[in-house]
Length: 611
Image 1 (cartoon, one colour):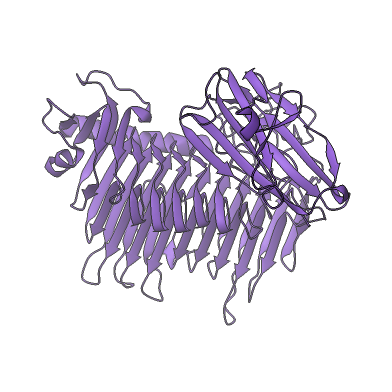
Image 2: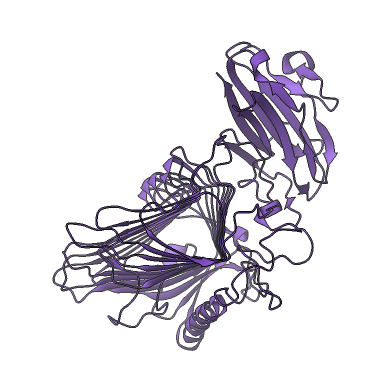
């Protein structure tokens, strides 16, 4: 299924490029010497089928597309327009903190835009700091439509005071006589370090109809994206809210995607002030249809309400959700929550098909048995869950109809670096081959014999080893106390150390686990007890002695480190012998020979409280 959909996506892109090259013109943009010195000027001049070709460089713009257009926007061109790089970091569009970087608005019209190969950054808006998309159909129109493809872009460092820090997509139909449509393809982007005060730090998708009969349509293909290190009130990685909105076409007009899906994404290391650190999906008054969620990794996400992984909610929408070969692990609180909700005798007949997933090892900070999967019915909810060949943590089925299809396990799946399986994992060669996709999240063929693996990654015969790049800019992350580190190649996903109090044994543990690095680095570790000793910050030296910054200056824990390392530091402390206080710990990684106060670093902070 994943290969088929990727083939369809590729065919759509090729078709668009062919049409453009056959019938449209090239509108070339560079800072000096081109027909256009700004992207906006080229868009204003463009006709249907034109391609906006942008020379590598930095462009300070807030771009608006509000007229009927059918265009392609490409970054990465050299100054002669003979070669093009696929590295989006080479072509940067900076919104200067003034507005959305891209603002696309269709009012009773049709707009088609494909954006490829750009860094979209430093946007600030109420919604959609990076990219804002709005399709509106009024009561006197024949409808409104936006076809948007965002592929191979770096959408980073954007902010929204309300929703959609990186990307915000919104459609509104005025009544049941008109139809507002958005076809959205998010493919192979990195959506990272964006923030939203309300919902959807990475992306936000919202459909609404102003009638009791749904008449909006948002079809979304979210495939192959890295959605990491974003921050929001709810839905740190992504937030999908479809109210009176279809997510399949249902014969109301042919669309390229022909159904919505969330496949082969890494949704890791996102944070929330409130709940749903990873992904939130809410379907309300939608047509019956199938939403496929397949081959994703949802890991290391954090919230403050104990719902760090993913939540699926359904309200009188009767959907079928296929949840297949996902890895959901190391999130704070619940890994997966699904809820069906009806109203006043109108049932919600949600069907959740769960096969070959790993939903295990969430809420690691809990010292007591805890729920990792919570399935529930609200008023007139009537959820049916078909579950087979999964590896599941503690499961609470509440009052749903839970059909155990067999081969479900509760054994530790042995997940290692970057959420890959380790040798000896009981998830290897134990999936249901009839349900598994043809390839895994990285495009590796699922093993034909004896059977495929559970989760997003196939085990390829040797353990995967993470490699983190050397710091090239400032990066900071704070996270709550966790008992085990998360080893990852992406700095925004990694949790390289722990300070953790085990209430059952009255023991405080400290542990460091770092991946290999692409070049030598120096590592600094320190701690403070501000309630007791606010004047001092203590550093841990290579020999585990403690030295204050005031007396000794910066002291390295490790120097010239390249390989991976794991250390328990001092082992366990008996907390009954320690003062009652908050203990704070930090870890700093810098290029070898660099300063911990210099311009290039990873800075991680955590804390634990002894009561």
